[in-house]
Image 1 (tube, rainbow, N blue to C red):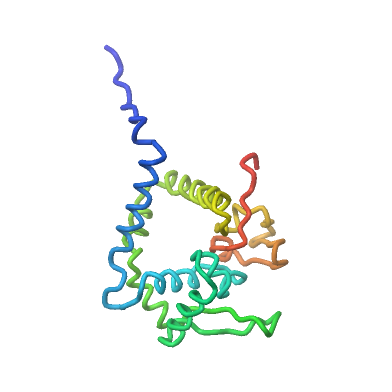
Image 2: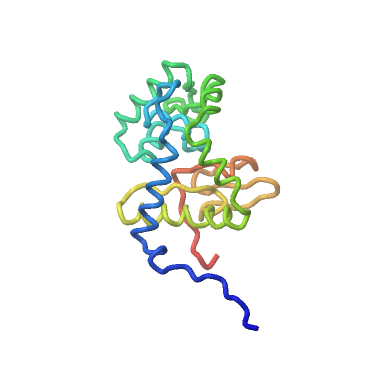
Length: 199
């Protein structure tokens, strides 16, 4: 009696055009509730999420502009609206009094509880651990490849960055000469430099 073989994936399903279209579709579907009762625009939702999930060095207007691939003026206007609504708070940099960074307020955190991406986050959370790990490896690489092709900013997390060095319970970023707490290692950074695959 012959053993039944696992079904082979259709090569057409793995075509770059098909996968790219599916990625775009997932993104559109996840953002389908933007606006809603919160009445935030897509750019405002993106900004609120960014400042909630970015590391200390990246919570600046210029870093958000790079992340959003927009002008500094457009990014500043989006930030100003969120600040006026009490969702973001401006803080002066401790190391450089001329620069500012932004923190999400309690009202902003409450708003994020109704984040339109929550259904996508739940879907990802239901994936097997191996699949989530694969996404964690693949998505930063895709971001790096796309950024390189378009001359844009590469975004990723410390654990997979060439600037990162593990130290005890936390780490160290050589790019900004900053010690990192354990929770910061998984935050978004706009100074991301992917490690070579051999590492």
